[in-house]
Amino acid sequence: MYGLDQDPTRSFGQLCLVARRLVERGVRFVQVFHGGGGAGLGRPFGIKKNHGDLAAQVDQPMAGLLKDLKRRGLLDDTLVVCGTEFGRTPGAEGDGRDHHPHGFSAWLAGGASAEA
Image (cartoon, rainbow, N blue to C red; front, side):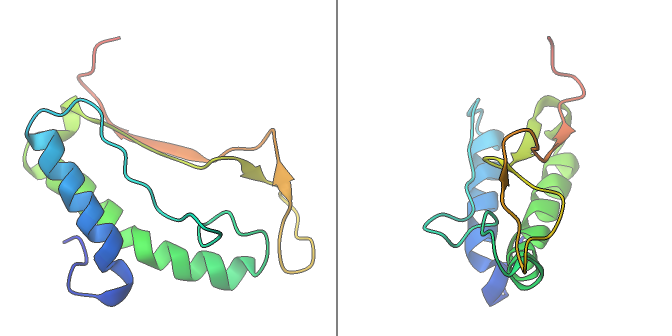
């Protein structure tokens, strides 16, 4: 479910599985990080190849985490936030894009029963 049996997804899948186990044990805040050291989704060049390769590393593990939380009845009480550190310009600049301080991508899942 988390892609533990595949090289591209194994590392991030392990982090997502640990996150689920922490949530299951009542830990109130869990952060899972992908990237760093210039190898993350923030690379400003080679957008198509880099983002394709990196998305393949996180897609199955993130889907597995959401499915697993839901299956265990934990998703309604857990807010999953996926975000980036900054945005990118919408247009291509060569084979990449520059930073854009007013653009930011994020998605949320779960948290249906969370109280304000």
